[in-house]
Amino acid sequence: MATNRSSAAAQPALGEQQPLVTSEEQAPAAAPAKPATHDTAPPPALLDFMMKDWKPRSKKLPPRIKNAESFKARRRALSKLFPGETLVIPSGHEKVRANDTNFRFRPGSDFYYLTGNMEPDCVLVLQPKEKGGHTDVLFVEPNPGRTDATFFTDRVKGELWEGPRLGVKESQARYGVDQAQGLNELPDLLASLSGEVSRPTRVLRGLSPKVDGAVPEPSDKDKDKQLAQALSEMRLLKDAQELKELQTSIDSTQRGFEDVIRGLKTAKTERYVEGIFNLRARVEGNDVGYRTIAAAGSHACVLHWHHNDGPLVPGDLLLLDAGVEGQTLYTADITRTLPIAGKFTPEQREIYELVLKAQDAAFAQVKPGNDFMEPNRAAMRVLAEGLEALGILDSAEEALKDEHQFYKRYSLHNVSHMLGLDVHDCAQARQEAYKYGKLQAGMVLTVEPGLYFQTDDLTVPKRYRGIGVRIEDDVVVTARGCKVLSADIPRATKDVEAWMRGLWAEDKAGKKKKKKK
Image (cartoon, rainbow, N blue to C red; front, side):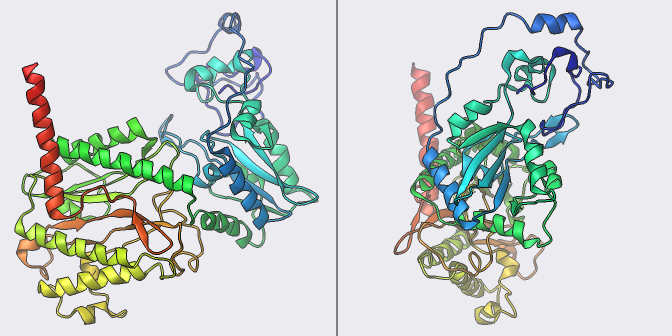
């Protein structure tokens, strides 16, 4: 969006670098222009020509965002936790990928959770009222339209460069906040929070260096931390709308996995797998929820294999850990370990079914009142006993002792984390509310046991070395147990093999039908 400057004469040259937050005053017209090396500055005649003969902008306000009442209810819930205090929550800024190109913007999860707004550089401020409660004030980029030459001269914010921003009045209508103001008004507000008569203030830090710098950290550093904790703990329990959004992302992820299976007939590398899945994520969602792990063969023994540059070899396994982030930013997190040729070898099947048994044991322990770690304990016992039966561990009981934990040589990670707007959701919650807390109805978490046998591990029989298996599903805690949200994605070995055969048969039949036509 074009920044709000008063005249064409005050515009920077085409290509001049702009600050990420445009609420501060720009350099005066006399300042030397710094265009990009591949740009030229527009002459005055061009500026005059570009400012004329544009159709007036529509005065019609945009419709209210879907589920606006849910976002409002979250703001009211947060308000009750911090009476009489000013709360500052930025959306964050675009981040540089290389030189003058940025990564695709994705707002901070807490800011989105409270507003539904996906624009960069915005700031939500909850200002306390005298009689209690808070006023929502959303600071956004103004949109002067074609009345300001920055619509075509500003390569960072200009409409013709980046597309339009909503604007102030439009944002108030769209997001249902009490007030909206331009970002140029934000510095004065932030200054008032740290002046001689400072107000009790908490800032969600780490998202905007400008905001962090404008509001000094309190002497009690826990104050700001408590705001982040409160938001994470609010997000621990998902409402019906959030569960619907998660299910949408999971269903889309299933279709992405099926795209990959169809592609395995011709795919040669892990990168091809990544590309196939990521296409589905961009077509049906906002993006992938995290970097896709497409780990074939022994690469599956590297937990976060992101290089995705290895070959796909018939007879090997492909560990695909991927999730679609939906249009509303809720992400799935699913892992399936697939036989590239469509059929497990006896050794692969043996390890896979042990992991599957561990996952079933973990599912049984996902219920209200259980410790968050109870599903992990159940899964690790199954894995340790299985490793003993395979002759890899001498004693499951010894391996399971807290002072030993020898099973971790092969399992490496715990089986669960919270899931929602972030793949590792609610990360700022207190340990006593999360890792050492109790499961509650409405919590959404992953269940993902795995076994990873390194190629050079002499404690493992040679026939198993290089096998890595992880099975991951997303579940919601219900009143009496849990519901597996990803239950439609096949898990058992025979079901996985049938799933792959079926998709390949469909494709083959489709090609024959097309050929006949």
